[in-house]
Image (cartoon, rainbow, N blue to C red; front, side):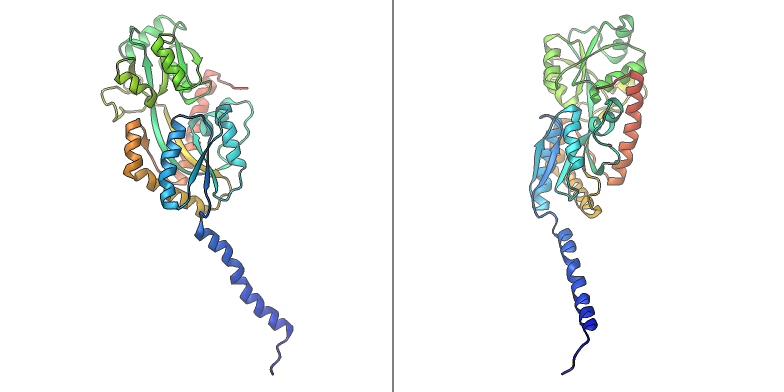
Length: 327
């Protein structure tokens, strides 16, 4: 009987063990996902929640696992976003981020619990939506130019409402004032529902709000929308002008995207990107988005990262010019 030296036997066992040891990692990547995926939404029920659920439900069909939406609102989106940033980067916790949580907050909060550019792996931008400049029916101004004239004639006498200090809607009003040389007093509310109630009751003369929130009331003739905040008119309401037609350079879009914690394996980010983009292209999601006045996007992680960097710089400049800070 031929005997083999111990070293030879050990080498042979190692050669067999090495490919076997590599299999679990490869199998895990190939099998992803093999459990439900948590989607943290850092805001209360509203457009953000709707976007996450619509896209997540469609992604579940192709991923073979449910995407479970978890609402963790507070601190302008900082609480839920921090939870996402600190989660295990294994692809089983992702979050929905917005222009507020991932572009504006770093410039307005005195202390941030996360770095919006370093602590996340962008997956894709899901959607973009214009805001609307809505006014009461009895406001004398019938268009943007007449509103500018009215505001300049009575500086500081007109209030405008938004969904909170430092939100994209607040900064849309700040940008409008900066570009038109007008002065308005900002009144923060707790969400679109309160804004619309204040407009309908006459408590507020004008407000910036999500187009999807204001449009149903404008369609019923209860309020008027003088302009949308996108660079061009909304396909949902092409008769309403873009504010940029009267105020060159004005643009303010609310946007939503999916993020994973930094360090999430690139192949998992790529898989999530692929399924999210496919969901956005589906008729189920795109038609529902159109009904809400939302435009589906679906770009690459690299494109989304560059977009966020640009938005962070742009809105930081607006916030500093308006001296907007949150303790």
